[in-house]
Image 1 (tube, rainbow, N blue to C red):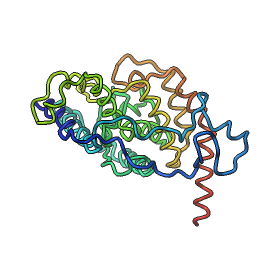
Image 2 (cartoon, helix red, strand yellow):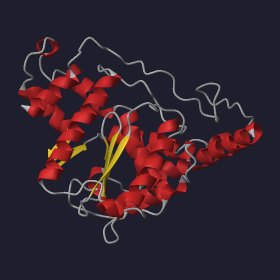
Image 3 (cartoon, rainbow, N blue to C red):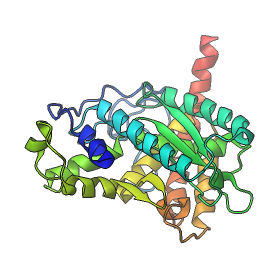
Image 4 (cartoon, helix red, strand yellow):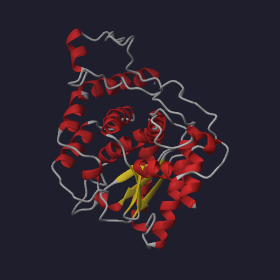
Length: 313
């Protein structure tokens, strides 16, 4: 019954066909058009360096993907999934926000605040929780900004990042937050619905019971297994989160090289558990290579930002 209620909340107000999400926060490294005209008088040689190998600029990403759902729906999904998750962890006696990780949690919250400020959704109700599961090397950001970090992410034996390194934390958090700001879960739901996968919308709109087809569709978007609730994304959305997350951490002032280091590390690791970072974020080195292609632009963004901040002082 709870799952049905969770799914129903996703479509509870089906009058909203809301694709408009407002303007992207203005970045200090702006472009005058889509064809490569740069406003800060860069040379032609430098212009060639601000694209990755596919010819895409770091700042050139879509913010208004096809989405049938209101932003409030994303927030409701995140709140309800987090509530379910925490109840399950308490039942399994998994520690939530253990005291020994209080300092790390505070640092993560500060990083999230900085990234959120420069993101496309600065007003999401961001919230951070640490779950004491050393066997899970992962983190996630649910729709609407609810963030979960598993202690296995910075385990000395199997971890992926150094918990004392804010730049590496920002690399992972920026990527996960990008999934939420780009609204990947509800965008995927919208696509599935367009193909008739989610069943009759009319019955949902008038409050009737949600059928098994919608539940099946939701399970494809949010994996409910091994006592975990973790979003699942397509390769397209993973690539989008790589780009947007890299931009966010850069704009927030963190070292972009850290993201490249993290992805290279992930590419060298193998883990058969489908809820670990190495499986849920497949990497063969291409992801790090793509970020390297944006490194020059990332440096230009930060350098230009420092100049502007210096002028303001």
